[in-house]
Length: 237
Image (tube, rainbow, N blue to C red; front, side, top):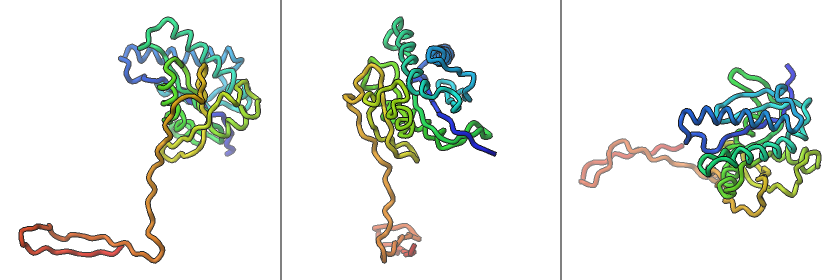
């Protein structure tokens, strides 16, 4: 069965879990309304996207038949404008703030959603420390966008989309099995000036040097300092 390539996009609401039940339902409704409106403003048809609802998050698989340069460029800019407009009438605590991530690659429907490295990748990007820190550092921002190296190369650095390459900043993403360079943009902010802490890589196991043998000490009985007879067993391995 052939597998198609998709532009995978994940949009997540910041601080959603801190809302009460009634407010969560309102936020979900607003999220979908904003995504729909941004697509219309960018000349896109969300009815053609494969979409997986996840409460405060939506995963979309966007086919190559859609105008992908508009998704990467115009859609993101329109979404930022719309979210800012919504927030004008709200207090600081009630603002809606979004993280948006994009990756690209082969993907397919699976038993419980969608399968593919790009699907995993976009999930890691949208939850990465880089994009979270960016919104925390840019308090006035309503949206932060992070894209994979492939999306940046094909749709932004190539100047096929309306986003300018100089707006984005290279960041390292270390999340679970992902350790790669991505590109970050916070609309309305000099993204390069944001103070971001580099991620801490996961510790790597140290293999014994060539010719060395590891030894595990196994205590077959309790060790005491009261003059009792202690039994030790040494096991190689």
